Image (cartoon, rainbow, N blue to C red; front, side, top):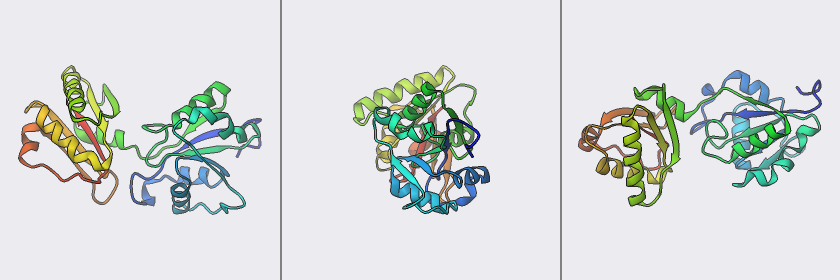
Amino acid sequence: MSESRKTGRLYLIPSFLGENDNTIIPDQVRNVVNELRHFIVEDARTARRYLRAIGYKKNFDTEVTIQELDKHGSNHAKQLLAPIESGHDIGIISEAGNPCIADPGYEIVSYAHIRGYQVSPLVGPSSILLALVASGFSGQQFSFHGYLPIQSADRARKLKQLEDAAKRGGTQIFMETPFRNDAMLRDALQHLSADTKLCVACDLTLPTEYIATKKISDWRRQVPELHKRYCIFLIG
């Protein structure tokens, strides 16, 4: 794949959004991945499981190098990307969805650009974009805020800020860890205005997928159970 280049290429490899479902990973991704021997991942065990699930055949013990990315990826980006200097392609894999969104992989990509390496994103599932297009909110202008503050008072203030921003015309997108979803929704229902619209998008691409957009007043009448589900929230 990289024999004709002096340096290799960094591929951004999409992963499943939840349980294994081979139907959402395009053949192009499989074809590229099956040629790679070097990977940068968040967790080696889940990365191996994902690679096997999409048909990767190489021997992990003798043919493949898998390096884990810590939370301070820029500190050892040079070491992680060393195979590129020898002409080898590298794939970076997130725990879920596309790399570099709400994870430290972006620091590796930033270093790759500094070094002048070619970066190639591969097509795959993105919970943020899937939630946005299914929400009924404007995709013309939107902002992703990652995780909101953990403390309830701080989170309430941030929710009101996002509500104000949404009123000015931009869709506001954020997420939460699965075990704090219910607390997030409770705060949203308590602090957002009754007429504000909220979209809850859970378990995207999975058999338990749930997407609904309602006014806060309507959500208050029927609150869904979100505990330990993968959720994206949008205010529009």
